[in-house]
Length: 166
Image (cartoon, rainbow, N blue to C red):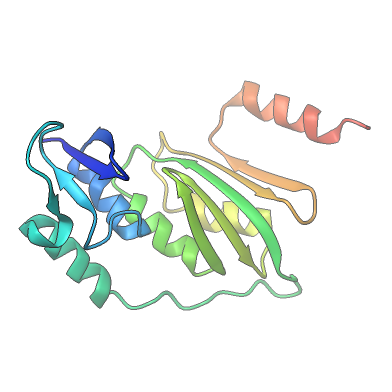
């Protein structure tokens, strides 16, 4: 089964149930979000569809993650980009939220402000990801980056670009 989402008159999708559940966990699908199993079908609020109502209730009952602070780290601004193919998207977003104030920008892209480092985020979050998932963490405050599972060529290209003199 596939799902579509309507936002301000524009239709997005199709999305798998796993993607939709991750969107609920990330806060991108709310109780009032308009969804339909058919692009041209009847639209309903997520809270009116049993499957989504259950996910929204689960999210409401899930305790907020305990905030994590990296010793010696000052608050910084991070861009976190993840390509998640495994079933861990909701767990990933929940774990990421433990590191500070989190804003979902688009699917697989978040802004985070918190007292940690890009290396700590990479190390901690990579344990959640599957073998085909990818992660890039950019510390916009300190001009640093850390990544996981991007491949040898990307690894080399990032290192070369990041170390170039201006």
